[in-house]
Image 1 (cartoon, rainbow, N blue to C red):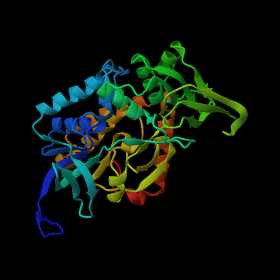
Image 2 (cartoon, rainbow, N blue to C red):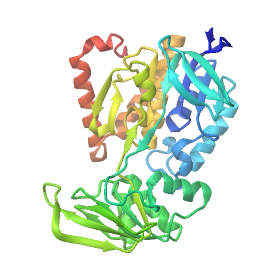
Image 3 (cartoon, rainbow, N blue to C red):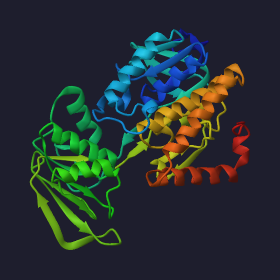
Image 4 (tube, rainbow, N blue to C red):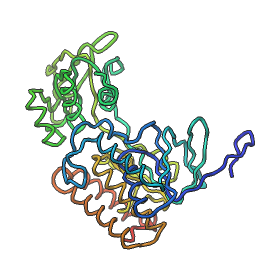
Length: 385
């Protein structure tokens, strides 16, 4: 029982499993847990809709058919919603904002104008990631957007951000959003990438090249031009030491600059929970230490999706399922079905990360494994699988 500053009693609701975040990792986790027999599952989503980034993804997934290949992100979100509606063990609270994780392992959140308390036996943090920004002259002019904002405008609300866009960042997000802009009949002046090569999947880069969009590798943006809004952008070539090459500037006539320069895991609740943190550049920055079952150094707290390390949506779905299996094992015991599903999810994750596109993730996992091995006392509950 809690009392607020006015002495009013705030009741604490209890549940077997709580999930913060209704994106791909969170949705996959509650469905898998319910299918395995976990009861009293609570899903908290700050928006008024479920799906997270999936609702912005109009492109088709590729890979294995049982991992939603051939489906668009918006269709996958609808599929998850329909499945959740069929499972009575799952209670969904939309418009519920997690506010804090307290010393007695109680999660505080606001919903419908009221502050509430939740005491879960197991908690999954599937809070996603936030966009990183880039420092350059006049980056505060109207017309400078993050890629996620552009996707929200176009794919959710049907609003184009401008007439001609310069994309900064040649990773998957930059390439996908650039192509979505072209599909919306928005001009794309080019894709700027500081590295010597495009970092996104070749399938996305090939579509951009076929449309005749210039790819400016070893370049960066140095300033936006305009008085009250973006009227142009100046990019500059970089040398081998990532320093601007004098005299190698190029001005592009654009009215919009879209930044797709990476994501940073949202880890506030993990820090409040006292989870041990690690700086893993390959994962996007600071992330909670976690074992192979997605368990953090706090035995009751798990993490999945971009909050565990920025990766693609399919990986987030599989991590959510893996965490759900581990939590189900804690709550229901080592039933054969649970262990089989856990092995399946882990094997699929390993297959997904094979090959050159998974080099960065495998490097980050190895870095985390070295950190764990160097501090075994932090992980007295190491994976029992």
